[in-house]
Image (cartoon, rainbow, N blue to C red; front, side):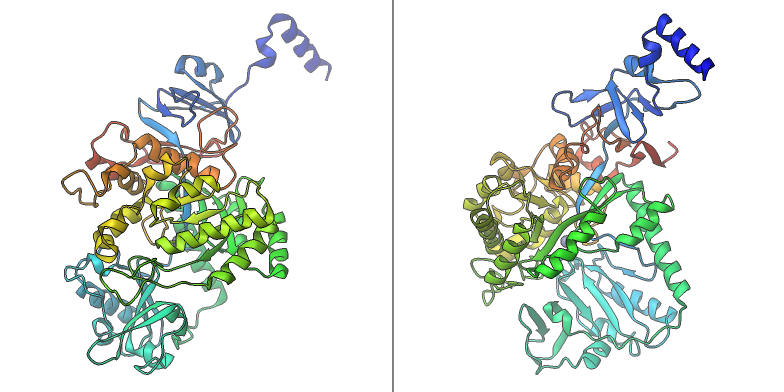
Length: 561
Ligand SMILES: [Zn+2]
């Protein structure tokens, strides 16, 4: 004790800096650092201690925080550095190694082949699952039918979701067990697609018609340990994917298993922060239970947090179930489907808002968005204005008169740029050019004063943020079509796209005071990429890879380059 205090006395006499100089755990030098901090937009270096950034600035200055042997130093060699990506809308969970991946296929016969292979690996009666197909990507652009899979799966139930999850293809095995025939009426909010000639179900079930499904799957004798080992492996795979893509924060749209993420955290495997929500309800008993969950995973936390309450107001554009004011151009017999009667949705929002919850409602069609804005407006009238940061998930097709209402009501448009470049292939066919003007209207929303939150809707779209950045700045298909892009006046700059994918998303989860910028006092969630996104041609954006992912000051991924 005496010895230590003697040292400190000497320090005091010899040098002030001896007392005040901080040593960083990690220092990054020689970077081109886009901070997203308006007051200090570009710096060269960052010093980190523990989970937080302690300073930023020129390399020469920040080097002063290095203590040889104690501080880890990354020389970025001029590479671009940005805040970690924060995906504001994901459906995250364990990856299933048996899932049949059909994303981006153009030839429907691949469905037949892949199902055949998986059936051969399975026991009779075992459930075969897969999806992410989009009939708009098929060369014939036709909805797939049960005939594609029936002949290769006579003894197994098969479920293959469309990429948006709003429609599903099933085989005759499932139709039979579920008792779905040409006589079965469409349920409220759903459709059993039928062959126009025969009236027979085609195997496509839309929206709530999916609730009719009974798989009759055979119980596969796997021990509980085998089951949980498989799930655990699935979580590890999912986490690995996120960190390799530089996604340091995830906001789950809806419920997920809090305890699984706690286990990941305990075992040092949680490499992305995650918010987890619950389904919106107007039942106060349930809402009180949610409050208990929120106490355990509070908003003040930085890792596993209680998110927002989620509901659906309508379906999707791809499935022709988004709720529109006017009928669809390509199917004038429908203007989409409401998932809830208006009054019921309003009642739920008013109750949950009054209890202080944040709410996020899925709305794709112009009428659905109008409804949700009306309901949020009503919540302000009835319960008073507070910093509620209610969100509209997707905010996809908007009437011009509704665009300024987002910022007036402080409602966050939570949007997914890749939906634009996926859906633009059929959007005009479905709703016509006039209504498409208000679709994915990022620039109009920004001009009207909105703060956007960007995400992917993973697993509807891939988790890779580079696809979102590409979509936001080009509005072109993934092959890089000629021209200026689809409604080019709605394109935004790369800096803006990165901002909404980081700070914008942090704002949507009440974390903009500590996340989303590279700034002193902020959480050290940082990504180093291998190409300069700010200067490279469009064609290279989706080829950009992450070299380092840092979460809370820890390097969780290093490409080795
Ligand atoms: Zn979603």
